[in-house]
Image 1 (cartoon, rainbow, N blue to C red):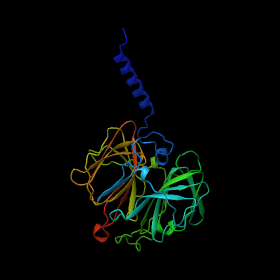
Image 2: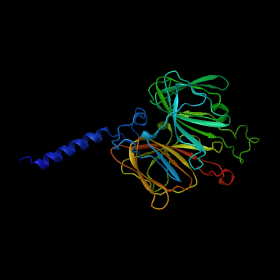
Image 3: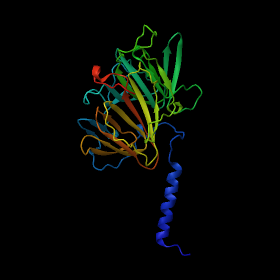
Image 4: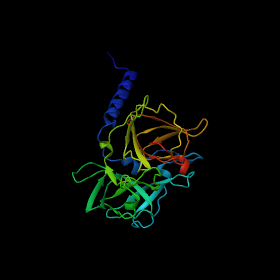
Length: 323
């Protein structure tokens, strides 16, 4: 029959929808790094000076247009970092920092007693790990070569202050640092070295998915061992469009979060709270007992990485006792 203007429009909508669906990354699909973290798309926010960033008593949101880059102590002077969370935010225990490293640039040492976790967001790094012998560990945002050992690396405090990382090509890393807090419950005299965390590396998608507990359906991975020697863990959470947290969480753990892929709505704060439209590249700090809830939007999956302090008694240091 005759094609009406309305049916042409409907056909166009269906075509665009099909094209979008064919490009949507889904949970479990392969990827090529996290380009929207380092090269965010123009947001069309409006007038210069307008930002979605906000600092509240129990949370903070830092969006890409608000990142401030600076030199890092003892790092190659060509490197620059943008801090997304630090103890100035309502007493956070940790720092979260994006670091740009040009080809050949080397990292600086962590402070004495500080542990370090890094995720390669773009590019690659090489780190020489010395145990009984020197082992060269290569990390890359893309699992592309057999000599790539992972995309993330954890260094305990006795190594973070001596292991240097060298950029292989233009590289961006996400770095979490924290003063290590030994557990008073571990008994190293019964099991030597059980009180000390070990260095660890791997690929996110190689980690097993964990049951988040009914009725939650989010895909959850924890990147570090579930052992009391570790005083924090790093979670990666994947949501299909339309999936959401069933629990409006409120707990004594604190979080530092970076959106790696996708977009969605985060509800944060006390009372009626604040509702944020977050996208890849946005960062959030959540203080203890900050109410928090997330729902993923189209067109593709959400993936975010999340710091969570663990395995420490809150009576001792104001930190949390469960994973």
